[in-house]
Image 1 (cartoon, rainbow, N blue to C red):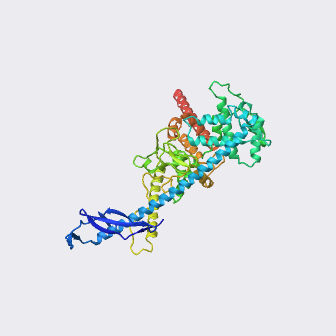
Image 2 (spheres, helix red, strand yellow):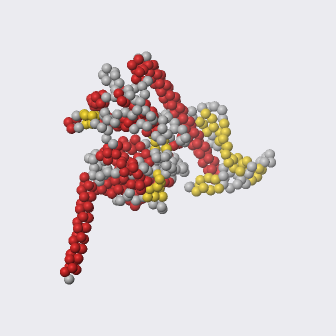
Image 3 (spheres, rainbow, N blue to C red):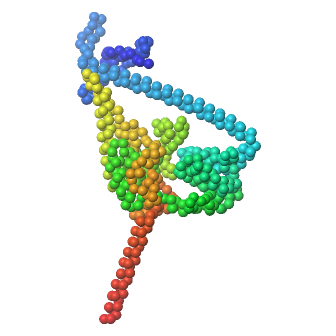
Length: 530
Protein backbone atom coordinates (compact mmCIF):
# COMPACT_ATOMS: atom_id res chain seq x y z
CA UNK A 1 0.00 0.00 0.00
CA UNK A 2 1.78 3.18 -1.26
CA UNK A 3 1.55 6.44 0.63
CA UNK A 4 1.32 9.90 -0.90
CA UNK A 5 2.99 12.79 0.96
CA UNK A 6 2.68 16.55 0.60
CA UNK A 7 5.71 18.82 0.32
CA UNK A 8 5.20 19.94 3.91
CA UNK A 9 4.86 23.39 5.46
CA UNK A 10 6.21 25.23 8.47
CA UNK A 11 4.40 27.55 10.90
CA UNK A 12 5.16 29.30 14.20
CA UNK A 13 3.44 27.91 17.26
CA UNK A 14 4.15 29.22 20.76
CA UNK A 15 7.41 30.80 19.63
CA UNK A 16 8.77 27.66 17.95
CA UNK A 17 9.07 26.42 14.39
CA UNK A 18 6.50 23.69 13.80
CA UNK A 19 6.49 21.38 10.75
CA UNK A 20 3.33 20.00 9.16
CA UNK A 21 3.14 17.07 6.73
CA UNK A 22 0.00 15.65 5.13
CA UNK A 23 -0.26 12.07 3.84
CA UNK A 24 -2.82 9.60 2.56
CA UNK A 25 -2.94 6.01 1.31
CA UNK A 26 -4.20 5.15 -2.19
CA UNK A 27 -6.20 8.35 -2.66
CA UNK A 28 -7.91 8.09 0.70
CA UNK A 29 -8.49 10.69 3.35
CA UNK A 30 -5.66 13.12 4.09
CA UNK A 31 -4.04 12.85 7.53
CA UNK A 32 -1.47 15.01 9.26
CA UNK A 33 1.77 14.67 11.15
CA UNK A 34 3.28 17.55 13.13
CA UNK A 35 6.58 18.08 14.86
CA UNK A 36 8.78 20.84 16.21
CA UNK A 37 12.00 21.79 14.36
CA UNK A 38 14.92 22.53 16.67
CA UNK A 39 18.06 21.78 14.63
CA UNK A 40 19.20 20.83 11.14
CA UNK A 41 22.14 19.14 9.43
CA UNK A 42 24.32 21.74 7.72
CA UNK A 43 26.83 19.77 5.59
CA UNK A 44 27.50 17.22 8.29
CA UNK A 45 27.28 19.56 11.30
CA UNK A 46 24.26 19.80 13.58
CA UNK A 47 23.15 23.42 14.05
CA UNK A 48 20.43 24.92 16.23
CA UNK A 49 17.67 26.86 14.47
CA UNK A 50 17.24 30.54 15.27
CA UNK A 51 13.96 31.30 17.06
CA UNK A 52 11.24 32.95 14.95
CA UNK A 53 11.41 36.73 14.58
CA UNK A 54 8.46 38.90 13.61
CA UNK A 55 8.84 40.70 10.28
CA UNK A 56 5.57 42.62 10.44
CA UNK A 57 1.82 42.14 10.67
CA UNK A 58 -0.82 41.05 8.18
CA UNK A 59 -4.12 42.74 7.35
CA UNK A 60 -5.72 41.11 10.39
CA UNK A 61 -3.05 42.44 12.72
CA UNK A 62 -1.43 39.07 13.27
CA UNK A 63 2.37 38.88 13.29
CA UNK A 64 4.12 37.56 10.20
CA UNK A 65 7.44 35.70 10.10
CA UNK A 66 10.14 35.29 7.48
CA UNK A 67 11.14 31.69 6.97
CA UNK A 68 14.95 31.42 6.57
CA UNK A 69 16.61 28.78 4.36
CA UNK A 70 17.88 26.83 7.39
CA UNK A 71 14.27 26.24 8.50
CA UNK A 72 13.34 25.01 5.04
CA UNK A 73 16.34 22.65 5.10
CA UNK A 74 15.26 21.39 8.53
CA UNK A 75 11.72 20.85 7.16
CA UNK A 76 13.07 18.81 4.24
CA UNK A 77 15.22 16.68 6.56
CA UNK A 78 12.32 16.14 8.96
CA UNK A 79 10.05 15.14 6.05
CA UNK A 80 12.63 12.59 4.77
CA UNK A 81 13.04 11.18 8.27
CA UNK A 82 9.28 10.76 8.74
CA UNK A 83 8.96 9.04 5.35
CA UNK A 84 11.88 6.71 6.13
CA UNK A 85 10.38 5.79 9.52
CA UNK A 86 7.00 5.08 7.90
CA UNK A 87 8.62 2.86 5.27
CA UNK A 88 10.62 0.98 7.91
CA UNK A 89 7.46 0.48 9.97
CA UNK A 90 5.59 -0.80 6.92
CA UNK A 91 8.39 -3.23 6.10
CA UNK A 92 8.47 -4.43 9.70
CA UNK A 93 4.72 -5.01 9.71
CA UNK A 94 4.94 -6.88 6.43
CA UNK A 95 7.74 -9.08 7.79
CA UNK A 96 5.70 -9.77 10.92
CA UNK A 97 2.70 -10.71 8.77
CA UNK A 98 4.81 -13.12 6.71
CA UNK A 99 6.30 -14.62 9.88
CA UNK A 100 2.85 -14.98 11.42
CA UNK A 101 1.54 -16.76 8.34
CA UNK A 102 4.59 -19.04 8.31
CA UNK A 103 4.10 -19.97 11.96
CA UNK A 104 0.41 -20.62 11.35
CA UNK A 105 1.31 -22.88 8.43
CA UNK A 106 3.87 -24.74 10.54
CA UNK A 107 1.38 -25.08 13.40
CA UNK A 108 -1.18 -26.52 10.99
CA UNK A 109 1.41 -28.94 9.59
CA UNK A 110 2.43 -29.93 13.12
CA UNK A 111 -1.20 -30.51 14.10
CA UNK A 112 -1.69 -32.66 11.02
CA UNK A 113 1.44 -34.66 11.86
CA UNK A 114 0.21 -35.13 15.42
CA UNK A 115 -3.16 -36.32 14.11
CA UNK A 116 -1.48 -38.86 11.85
CA UNK A 117 0.75 -39.99 14.73
CA UNK A 118 -2.29 -40.36 16.99
CA UNK A 119 -4.04 -42.49 14.39
CA UNK A 120 -0.92 -44.64 14.05
CA UNK A 121 -0.68 -45.00 17.83
CA UNK A 122 -4.35 -46.02 17.98
CA UNK A 123 -3.72 -48.62 15.27
CA UNK A 124 -0.80 -50.04 17.22
CA UNK A 125 -2.83 -50.02 20.41
CA UNK A 126 -5.29 -52.41 18.79
CA UNK A 127 -2.45 -54.89 18.22
CA UNK A 128 -2.00 -56.94 21.44
CA UNK A 129 1.69 -57.53 20.70
CA UNK A 130 2.38 -53.81 20.17
CA UNK A 131 0.38 -52.90 23.29
CA UNK A 132 2.41 -55.33 25.37
CA UNK A 133 5.66 -53.76 24.17
CA UNK A 134 4.36 -50.21 24.75
CA UNK A 135 3.44 -51.03 28.34
CA UNK A 136 6.86 -52.49 29.11
CA UNK A 137 9.10 -50.19 31.19
CA UNK A 138 12.89 -49.83 31.26
CA UNK A 139 13.37 -49.78 27.48
CA UNK A 140 15.61 -47.36 25.53
CA UNK A 141 12.99 -44.60 25.29
CA UNK A 142 12.21 -44.94 29.00
CA UNK A 143 15.78 -44.12 29.97
CA UNK A 144 16.02 -41.27 27.48
CA UNK A 145 12.89 -39.66 28.93
CA UNK A 146 14.34 -40.18 32.39
CA UNK A 147 17.41 -38.15 31.39
CA UNK A 148 15.22 -35.52 29.73
CA UNK A 149 13.27 -34.97 32.97
CA UNK A 150 16.42 -34.02 34.88
CA UNK A 151 17.00 -30.28 35.30
CA UNK A 152 20.77 -30.64 34.87
CA UNK A 153 20.43 -31.71 31.22
CA UNK A 154 20.19 -28.93 28.62
CA UNK A 155 17.22 -28.84 26.25
CA UNK A 156 19.52 -29.05 23.21
CA UNK A 157 21.11 -32.21 24.62
CA UNK A 158 17.80 -33.95 25.31
CA UNK A 159 16.61 -33.02 21.82
CA UNK A 160 19.53 -34.97 20.35
CA UNK A 161 18.90 -37.91 22.70
CA UNK A 162 15.24 -38.10 21.71
CA UNK A 163 16.08 -38.03 18.01
CA UNK A 164 18.55 -40.91 18.37
CA UNK A 165 16.13 -42.87 20.57
CA UNK A 166 13.39 -42.45 17.97
CA UNK A 167 15.71 -43.82 15.27
CA UNK A 168 16.57 -46.79 17.51
CA UNK A 169 12.89 -47.48 18.25
CA UNK A 170 12.06 -47.38 14.54
CA UNK A 171 14.57 -50.16 13.79
CA UNK A 172 12.82 -53.42 12.93
CA UNK A 173 13.45 -56.66 11.08
CA UNK A 174 12.09 -57.43 7.64
CA UNK A 175 8.94 -58.97 9.13
CA UNK A 176 8.29 -55.80 11.18
CA UNK A 177 9.50 -57.09 14.57
CA UNK A 178 11.19 -54.21 16.48
CA UNK A 179 14.73 -54.66 17.72
CA UNK A 180 14.40 -52.41 20.79
CA UNK A 181 11.06 -50.55 20.81
CA UNK A 182 9.24 -51.39 24.04
CA UNK A 183 11.56 -54.30 24.84
CA UNK A 184 13.24 -54.31 28.28
CA UNK A 185 17.00 -54.06 28.07
CA UNK A 186 17.59 -57.35 29.83
CA UNK A 187 15.65 -59.10 27.04
CA UNK A 188 17.68 -57.62 24.17
CA UNK A 189 20.12 -60.26 22.95
CA UNK A 190 23.61 -59.75 21.56
CA UNK A 191 22.59 -61.38 18.26
CA UNK A 192 19.78 -58.79 17.87
CA UNK A 193 22.26 -55.97 18.37
CA UNK A 194 24.63 -57.52 15.84
CA UNK A 195 21.87 -57.93 13.29
CA UNK A 196 20.70 -54.35 13.88
CA UNK A 197 24.19 -52.97 13.32
CA UNK A 198 24.68 -54.95 10.10
CA UNK A 199 21.25 -53.87 8.84
CA UNK A 200 22.25 -50.22 9.28
CA UNK A 201 25.38 -50.75 7.23
CA UNK A 202 23.44 -52.45 4.46
CA UNK A 203 20.99 -49.53 4.36
CA UNK A 204 23.87 -47.17 3.50
CA UNK A 205 24.14 -45.21 6.77
CA UNK A 206 27.50 -43.60 7.48
CA UNK A 207 29.79 -44.94 10.18
CA UNK A 208 29.42 -41.66 12.12
CA UNK A 209 25.61 -41.99 12.26
CA UNK A 210 25.81 -45.62 13.34
CA UNK A 211 28.38 -44.76 16.01
CA UNK A 212 26.08 -42.10 17.51
CA UNK A 213 23.24 -44.59 17.86
CA UNK A 214 25.55 -47.24 19.25
CA UNK A 215 26.98 -44.83 21.83
CA UNK A 216 23.50 -43.91 23.04
CA UNK A 217 22.59 -47.58 23.41
CA UNK A 218 25.80 -48.18 25.32
CA UNK A 219 25.04 -45.24 27.63
CA UNK A 220 21.55 -46.61 28.26
CA UNK A 221 22.96 -49.97 29.28
CA UNK A 222 25.52 -48.32 31.53
CA UNK A 223 22.75 -46.34 33.24
CA UNK A 224 20.66 -49.47 33.67
CA UNK A 225 23.60 -51.41 35.11
CA UNK A 226 24.46 -48.68 37.62
CA UNK A 227 20.87 -47.94 38.63
CA UNK A 228 20.29 -47.25 42.33
CA UNK A 229 16.51 -46.79 42.33
CA UNK A 230 15.88 -50.14 44.02
CA UNK A 231 15.31 -52.06 40.82
CA UNK A 232 17.24 -55.22 40.06
CA UNK A 233 20.25 -54.15 37.95
CA UNK A 234 20.93 -55.77 34.62
CA UNK A 235 23.74 -58.24 34.06
CA UNK A 236 27.25 -56.88 34.42
CA UNK A 237 28.23 -58.60 31.17
CA UNK A 238 27.33 -55.98 28.62
CA UNK A 239 26.02 -57.89 25.55
CA UNK A 240 27.05 -55.31 22.97
CA UNK A 241 29.22 -56.72 20.16
CA UNK A 242 32.82 -55.62 19.69
CA UNK A 243 34.37 -55.52 16.25
CA UNK A 244 37.62 -57.40 15.85
CA UNK A 245 39.79 -58.09 12.85
CA UNK A 246 38.13 -58.90 9.50
CA UNK A 247 34.89 -57.35 10.74
CA UNK A 248 33.97 -60.18 13.10
CA UNK A 249 31.50 -59.25 15.84
CA UNK A 250 31.83 -60.90 19.24
CA UNK A 251 30.33 -60.34 22.67
CA UNK A 252 32.41 -58.50 25.22
CA UNK A 253 32.16 -56.70 28.53
CA UNK A 254 31.53 -52.99 28.41
CA UNK A 255 34.77 -51.01 28.45
CA UNK A 256 35.01 -48.39 31.15
CA UNK A 257 34.26 -44.81 30.16
CA UNK A 258 37.72 -43.70 31.24
CA UNK A 259 39.55 -46.26 29.15
CA UNK A 260 37.44 -45.55 26.08
CA UNK A 261 37.93 -41.82 26.37
CA UNK A 262 41.69 -42.05 26.68
CA UNK A 263 41.99 -44.39 23.70
CA UNK A 264 39.68 -42.36 21.46
CA UNK A 265 40.99 -38.81 22.04
CA UNK A 266 42.16 -37.13 18.82
CA UNK A 267 44.37 -34.09 19.39
CA UNK A 268 47.29 -32.21 17.87
CA UNK A 269 50.86 -33.01 18.84
CA UNK A 270 53.04 -30.09 19.81
CA UNK A 271 54.44 -29.55 16.30
CA UNK A 272 51.04 -29.91 14.61
CA UNK A 273 49.53 -27.58 17.22
CA UNK A 274 51.98 -24.80 16.31
CA UNK A 275 51.59 -25.50 12.59
CA UNK A 276 47.79 -25.29 12.79
CA UNK A 277 48.00 -21.94 14.61
CA UNK A 278 50.42 -20.50 12.03
CA UNK A 279 48.02 -21.50 9.26
CA UNK A 280 44.77 -20.36 10.93
CA UNK A 281 45.79 -16.92 12.26
CA UNK A 282 46.26 -15.08 8.91
CA UNK A 283 43.15 -16.72 7.42
CA UNK A 284 41.09 -15.80 10.49
CA UNK A 285 41.92 -12.11 10.03
CA UNK A 286 40.53 -12.03 6.50
CA UNK A 287 36.98 -10.85 5.77
CA UNK A 288 34.64 -13.82 6.03
CA UNK A 289 37.20 -15.91 7.91
CA UNK A 290 35.08 -16.33 11.02
CA UNK A 291 35.44 -20.14 10.96
CA UNK A 292 39.25 -19.90 11.06
CA UNK A 293 39.00 -17.19 13.75
CA UNK A 294 36.87 -19.51 15.87
CA UNK A 295 39.49 -22.23 15.42
CA UNK A 296 42.22 -19.92 16.70
CA UNK A 297 40.17 -19.04 19.80
CA UNK A 298 39.37 -22.70 20.53
CA UNK A 299 43.03 -23.71 20.11
CA UNK A 300 44.23 -20.96 22.48
CA UNK A 301 41.46 -21.12 25.13
CA UNK A 302 39.88 -24.59 24.94
CA UNK A 303 36.40 -23.03 24.75
CA UNK A 304 33.46 -25.08 23.51
CA UNK A 305 32.07 -24.27 20.07
CA UNK A 306 28.82 -23.04 21.67
CA UNK A 307 30.82 -20.65 23.87
CA UNK A 308 32.95 -19.33 21.01
CA UNK A 309 29.85 -18.56 18.91
CA UNK A 310 28.40 -16.53 21.84
CA UNK A 311 31.63 -14.66 22.74
CA UNK A 312 31.13 -10.87 22.60
CA UNK A 313 33.70 -8.09 22.42
CA UNK A 314 32.56 -6.79 25.82
CA UNK A 315 33.86 -10.04 27.36
CA UNK A 316 37.43 -9.29 26.26
CA UNK A 317 39.55 -7.09 28.53
CA UNK A 318 42.67 -6.03 26.65
CA UNK A 319 43.96 -4.00 29.60
CA UNK A 320 43.63 -6.87 32.07
CA UNK A 321 44.72 -9.45 29.44
CA UNK A 322 41.83 -11.87 30.04
CA UNK A 323 38.48 -12.87 28.55
CA UNK A 324 35.30 -13.92 30.33
CA UNK A 325 33.12 -16.81 29.19
CA UNK A 326 29.56 -15.84 30.10
CA UNK A 327 27.16 -17.25 27.49
CA UNK A 328 26.71 -20.05 24.99
CA UNK A 329 24.59 -20.68 21.90
CA UNK A 330 22.01 -23.41 22.41
CA UNK A 331 20.10 -25.39 19.77
CA UNK A 332 16.32 -25.68 19.66
CA UNK A 333 13.59 -26.86 17.31
CA UNK A 334 12.43 -24.40 14.66
CA UNK A 335 9.30 -22.58 15.76
CA UNK A 336 10.01 -23.39 19.42
CA UNK A 337 10.19 -20.49 21.90
CA UNK A 338 12.46 -20.87 24.94
CA UNK A 339 10.85 -19.49 28.08
CA UNK A 340 12.88 -16.97 30.05
CA UNK A 341 15.03 -15.90 27.06
CA UNK A 342 14.34 -12.50 25.40
CA UNK A 343 13.04 -12.71 21.84
CA UNK A 344 16.00 -10.70 20.48
CA UNK A 345 18.31 -13.47 21.75
CA UNK A 346 16.50 -16.22 19.81
CA UNK A 347 16.51 -17.20 16.15
CA UNK A 348 14.77 -20.00 14.28
CA UNK A 349 17.17 -22.72 15.42
CA UNK A 350 19.36 -21.21 18.16
CA UNK A 351 19.23 -19.03 21.25
CA UNK A 352 21.61 -17.45 23.77
CA UNK A 353 21.75 -19.43 27.00
CA UNK A 354 23.80 -19.79 30.17
CA UNK A 355 26.89 -21.97 30.38
CA UNK A 356 26.62 -25.76 30.19
CA UNK A 357 28.06 -26.28 33.67
CA UNK A 358 25.55 -23.92 35.31
CA UNK A 359 28.27 -21.48 36.42
CA UNK A 360 27.66 -17.78 35.86
CA UNK A 361 31.01 -17.24 34.14
CA UNK A 362 34.66 -18.19 34.12
CA UNK A 363 37.76 -16.14 33.34
CA UNK A 364 40.59 -17.22 31.04
CA UNK A 365 43.95 -15.45 30.92
CA UNK A 366 44.74 -14.56 27.31
CA UNK A 367 47.99 -15.69 25.77
CA UNK A 368 49.95 -12.98 24.00
CA UNK A 369 49.29 -14.68 20.64
CA UNK A 370 45.55 -14.63 21.23
CA UNK A 371 45.55 -11.03 22.46
CA UNK A 372 47.46 -9.81 19.40
CA UNK A 373 45.11 -11.78 17.14
CA UNK A 374 41.95 -10.33 18.75
CA UNK A 375 43.31 -6.77 18.61
CA UNK A 376 43.96 -7.14 14.89
CA UNK A 377 40.57 -8.82 14.36
CA UNK A 378 38.81 -5.90 16.08
CA UNK A 379 40.57 -3.40 13.77
CA UNK A 380 39.72 -5.43 10.67
CA UNK A 381 36.05 -5.65 11.63
CA UNK A 382 35.93 -1.87 12.16
CA UNK A 383 37.38 -1.39 8.66
CA UNK A 384 34.87 -3.85 7.20
CA UNK A 385 31.92 -2.03 8.82
CA UNK A 386 33.23 1.38 7.73
CA UNK A 387 33.65 0.25 4.12
CA UNK A 388 30.18 -1.33 4.11
CA UNK A 389 28.63 1.95 5.32
CA UNK A 390 30.51 3.86 2.63
CA UNK A 391 29.19 1.54 -0.08
CA UNK A 392 25.67 1.83 1.29
CA UNK A 393 25.72 5.64 1.30
CA UNK A 394 27.26 5.76 -2.17
CA UNK A 395 24.53 3.50 -3.57
CA UNK A 396 21.79 5.43 -1.77
CA UNK A 397 22.96 8.83 -3.04
CA UNK A 398 23.61 7.63 -6.58
CA UNK A 399 21.67 9.68 -9.14
CA UNK A 400 20.49 12.32 -6.67
CA UNK A 401 21.13 15.99 -7.38
CA UNK A 402 21.57 16.90 -3.71
CA UNK A 403 23.58 14.34 -1.68
CA UNK A 404 21.71 13.27 1.44
CA UNK A 405 23.44 12.66 4.77
CA UNK A 406 22.52 9.20 6.06
CA UNK A 407 23.00 7.45 9.36
CA UNK A 408 25.31 4.43 9.37
CA UNK A 409 23.47 1.25 8.41
CA UNK A 410 25.99 -1.14 10.02
CA UNK A 411 27.38 -0.77 13.52
CA UNK A 412 30.08 -2.55 15.53
CA UNK A 413 29.81 -2.32 19.31
CA UNK A 414 30.92 -4.13 22.44
CA UNK A 415 27.76 -6.26 22.23
CA UNK A 416 28.79 -7.55 18.79
CA UNK A 417 29.89 -11.17 18.53
CA UNK A 418 33.59 -11.83 17.97
CA UNK A 419 33.01 -14.54 15.35
CA UNK A 420 29.48 -13.50 14.37
CA UNK A 421 28.19 -11.79 11.25
CA UNK A 422 29.90 -8.40 11.32
CA UNK A 423 27.25 -6.56 9.27
CA UNK A 424 24.02 -8.05 10.67
CA UNK A 425 25.30 -8.40 14.24
CA UNK A 426 23.91 -11.94 14.59
CA UNK A 427 25.67 -14.96 16.03
CA UNK A 428 26.46 -18.13 14.08
CA UNK A 429 25.02 -21.54 14.91
CA UNK A 430 27.43 -24.11 16.43
CA UNK A 431 26.19 -26.60 13.84
CA UNK A 432 27.11 -24.17 11.06
CA UNK A 433 30.57 -23.83 12.60
CA UNK A 434 31.02 -27.61 12.72
CA UNK A 435 29.78 -28.02 9.15
CA UNK A 436 32.11 -25.37 7.69
CA UNK A 437 35.02 -26.47 9.86
CA UNK A 438 35.02 -29.80 8.01
CA UNK A 439 36.48 -28.13 4.89
CA UNK A 440 38.93 -26.04 6.93
CA UNK A 441 40.23 -29.02 8.92
CA UNK A 442 41.31 -30.80 5.73
CA UNK A 443 43.82 -28.00 5.08
CA UNK A 444 45.40 -28.53 8.52
CA UNK A 445 47.49 -31.37 9.97
CA UNK A 446 45.78 -34.50 11.24
CA UNK A 447 45.52 -35.35 14.93
CA UNK A 448 47.49 -38.05 16.73
CA UNK A 449 44.80 -40.64 15.89
CA UNK A 450 45.22 -40.08 12.16
CA UNK A 451 41.95 -38.13 11.78
CA UNK A 452 41.24 -34.51 10.93
CA UNK A 453 40.49 -32.57 14.08
CA UNK A 454 36.92 -31.48 14.85
CA UNK A 455 36.08 -28.39 16.97
CA UNK A 456 35.82 -30.74 19.96
CA UNK A 457 39.32 -32.08 19.16
CA UNK A 458 40.66 -28.51 19.34
CA UNK A 459 39.46 -28.42 22.94
CA UNK A 460 41.33 -31.70 23.53
CA UNK A 461 44.44 -30.19 21.92
CA UNK A 462 44.40 -27.19 24.27
CA UNK A 463 43.90 -29.43 27.31
CA UNK A 464 46.82 -31.59 26.20
CA UNK A 465 48.90 -28.43 25.73
CA UNK A 466 48.08 -27.39 29.31
CA UNK A 467 49.28 -30.73 30.67
CA UNK A 468 52.33 -30.64 28.41
CA UNK A 469 53.34 -27.32 29.98
CA UNK A 470 52.90 -28.48 33.58
CA UNK A 471 49.37 -27.25 34.40
CA UNK A 472 47.77 -29.49 37.03
CA UNK A 473 44.35 -31.06 36.52
CA UNK A 474 42.59 -28.75 39.00
CA UNK A 475 43.69 -25.55 37.24
CA UNK A 476 43.10 -27.12 33.83
CA UNK A 477 39.56 -28.10 34.84
CA UNK A 478 38.92 -24.53 36.01
CA UNK A 479 40.08 -23.10 32.68
CA UNK A 480 38.00 -25.52 30.61
CA UNK A 481 34.95 -25.35 32.86
CA UNK A 482 34.92 -29.02 33.90
CA UNK A 483 35.55 -31.11 36.97
CA UNK A 484 39.12 -32.39 37.59
CA UNK A 485 38.00 -35.98 36.98
CA UNK A 486 36.46 -35.14 33.61
CA UNK A 487 39.57 -33.16 32.69
CA UNK A 488 41.80 -36.07 33.64
CA UNK A 489 39.72 -38.81 31.99
CA UNK A 490 38.49 -37.09 28.86
CA UNK A 491 40.73 -34.22 27.77
CA UNK A 492 44.29 -35.47 28.29
CA UNK A 493 45.79 -36.98 25.16
CA UNK A 494 49.17 -38.33 24.18
CA UNK A 495 50.77 -39.73 21.04
CA UNK A 496 53.63 -42.09 20.32
CA UNK A 497 55.87 -39.16 19.44
CA UNK A 498 55.14 -37.48 22.76
CA UNK A 499 55.65 -40.78 24.56
CA UNK A 500 59.06 -41.15 22.86
CA UNK A 501 59.92 -37.58 23.80
CA UNK A 502 58.93 -38.23 27.43
CA UNK A 503 61.04 -41.40 27.54
CA UNK A 504 63.99 -39.47 26.09
CA UNK A 505 63.61 -36.82 28.81
CA UNK A 506 63.51 -39.53 31.48
CA UNK A 507 66.58 -41.18 30.00
CA UNK A 508 68.43 -37.84 29.95
CA UNK A 509 67.51 -37.20 33.58
CA UNK A 510 68.69 -40.67 34.60
CA UNK A 511 72.00 -40.19 32.77
CA UNK A 512 72.47 -36.84 34.49
CA UNK A 513 71.84 -38.38 37.93
CA UNK A 514 74.27 -41.22 37.12
CA UNK A 515 76.92 -38.72 36.01
CA UNK A 516 76.58 -36.79 39.27
CA UNK A 517 76.75 -40.02 41.30
CA UNK A 518 79.97 -41.10 39.56
CA UNK A 519 81.41 -37.62 40.09
CA UNK A 520 80.76 -37.82 43.83
CA UNK A 521 82.32 -41.32 43.95
CA UNK A 522 85.55 -40.09 42.34
CA UNK A 523 85.81 -37.21 44.79
CA UNK A 524 85.36 -39.49 47.78
CA UNK A 525 87.98 -41.95 46.48
CA UNK A 526 90.54 -39.22 45.90
CA UNK A 527 89.96 -37.88 49.40
CA UNK A 528 90.55 -41.33 50.92
CA UNK A 529 93.76 -41.87 48.94
CA UNK A 530 95.28 -38.62 50.21
